[in-house]
Image (tube, rainbow over all chains, first blue to last red; front, side):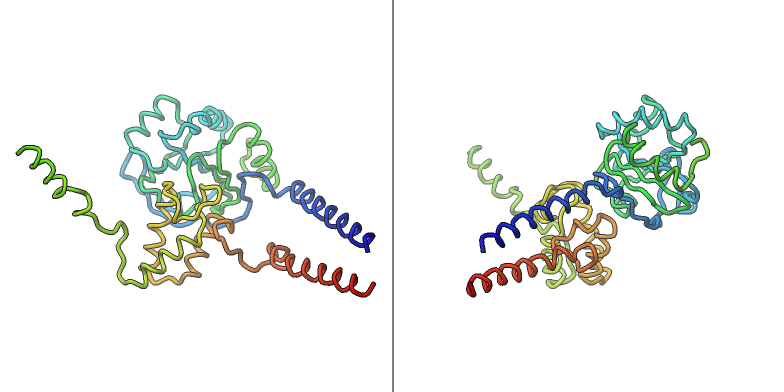
Length: 176
Length: 125
């Protein structure tokens, strides 16, 4: 009897470790990243600088969408990396999240503009539809479909671990 | 006189006299549905709080969205799907029955069977 109980305890412990080993080694698992493909939700939102309206047709192609705001401290930390990406010809679209247009424009003129254009999501409608929980968050779009959603600051490490493997696999952005 | 006036005005202008419900509903049922839904959905920004317990900006947005969806006549199931599509399955406290959750649902049963087996095995010896 005690042999059986001992055996079961050992088996359960082993199962436990195997389970976590598999979970940790899962390539698809990365904290903060979501690799499920989903459709870009439809929207109609103004440009930050003008009255021009953007909609889903403006996002056909391969883009990065970066959610940012002038009140967001981590966005300030992330910003220099985005400027670096822009110099590598990676098209980034800014999604200004719940921000006053004036503050956002001041922020951009002060720290540099890595964005192709900036969508001014004042009420956070599109952001809610995208599943944004805060700023910064970054999406990778391939032919109008979201293939990566990363919650948090993008830096060299995150770029190499999360975005690059997918970009190489799908052979997006000719520069790389 | 002045003190009396101030005391009186605190009653007259107190927030209580002008307070009203924060969210507006078309019917009592809708209101009940809303309050039961926000207890069943986790706030995506919190470690493990429900929407009801949270006033994080994203929770407030989701709450307004739930009201909007209720007004559009969406069912509870549709609202939950809408949110889990956007924020992931972890927003639902009650996990759905799918390939990823088989272990979660069957494990207690398996453990029960295992323990019953040990129990009967012991009786015989």
